Amino acid sequence: MSGARSYHAGFAAEEQVAQLYDRSGRVVCARRWRGSAGEIDLIARDGAEVIFIEVKQSKTHAQAAEHLTARQMARIYGAASEFLAGEPAGQMTEVRFDVALVDAVGRIEVLENAYTA
Image (cartoon, rainbow, N blue to C red; front, side):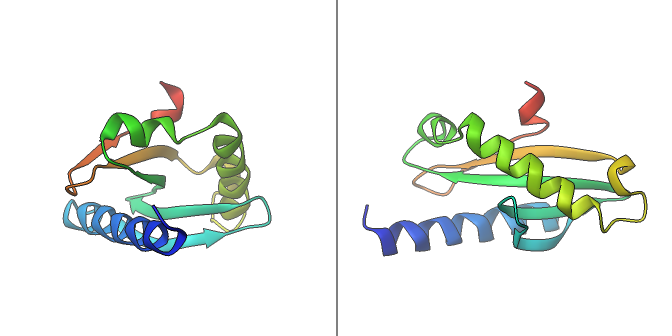
């Protein structure tokens, strides 16, 4: 996949996932949030809980899942920590890390608390 096509496919996948969260009542409050440690694709709120969402898009859900590396997870943790510094409860904020897998036909599989699995 070319760089531009890959970028647009990733952007479209993020938009689909954001709409899914919004429809379920978990409001997306940030898209492509960037801290010094890295970028978080989507950040949503479910009451007081903050949900950090990594979106992975590929031909199949399994292939999309393979694209998430330990190094990436560490960067997301670091960026999430920076984001939480601006929250009223700071690092004590209730959080969850989800991974949203999007396949070639746009089906979405959300793995809630994916990093603890």
